[in-house]
Length: 166
Image (cartoon, rainbow, N blue to C red; front, top):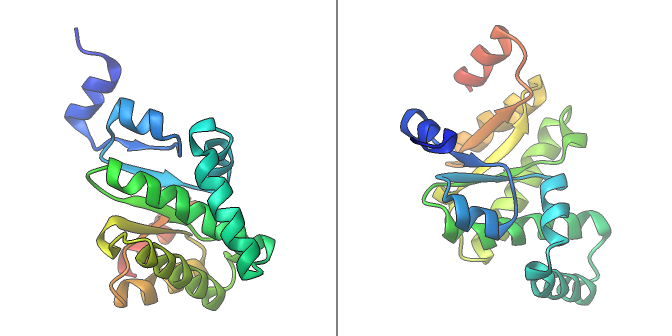
């Protein structure tokens, strides 16, 4: 008898909602996602202590502020996971920027540039944005720049149409 996970794998693509490398290796999802709560949980794992120490040391040397450290830790965790999945790593733009198209776009570009510096190609990255009007506009710009997006917090058919059009 097939497990529930095996049954799902026959019908859909499995996307891991975890930043834990052990879980990614165990379940072998097609894609994975990072967000602030998942990154925080992952960084509590002893296996990621060296990664955390290295990123914090680099941030201190660069004089990076706390918000920048959060972004770089998220990308560091995503870059660590990218080789473990056949598909993509979805990385979230700060939800506080959901009503600022330009700021969402700038943060997304920073995330993509950080992944690039770490050797993760654009085709392995999805930028996750809230499907507010401003988030959709940012996604539209990013898509024109060749950066694939994943829009979240979708609650209406009107939002779905605007997302699809973008």
